Length: 105
Image 1 (cartoon, one colour):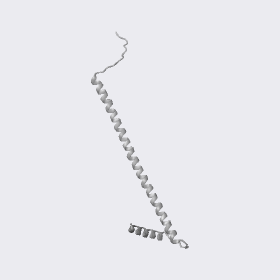
Image 2 (cartoon, rainbow, N blue to C red):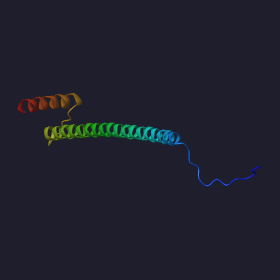
Image 3 (cartoon, rainbow, N blue to C red):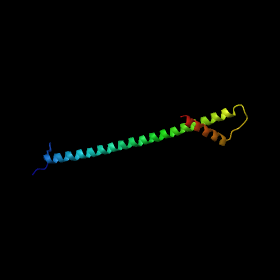
Image 4 (cartoon, rainbow, N blue to C red):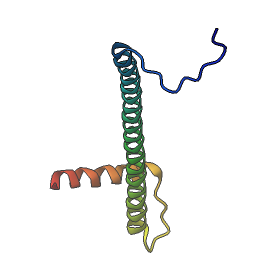
């Protein structure tokens, strides 16, 4: 009877080794594909966020530009007078100015 045995090297059948290697290879390929898909998702999300931020900043810039134009028109018309222009008159003036700029361009 053998009660204890020291195993120093285990050599499975070559087919078993190849099968185990193929299983490990497929697991690693699956993990790599998942990581690549997640990286692509992050790229797409970040690009969309950047585009949204750029559009927001562009809108804010256009709003500031229009505000400066309106203030400039108001100041140039009422300079030296006590006259106050109403919102409706300023809007009309702005539309006419934009119309002429469009025709010019």
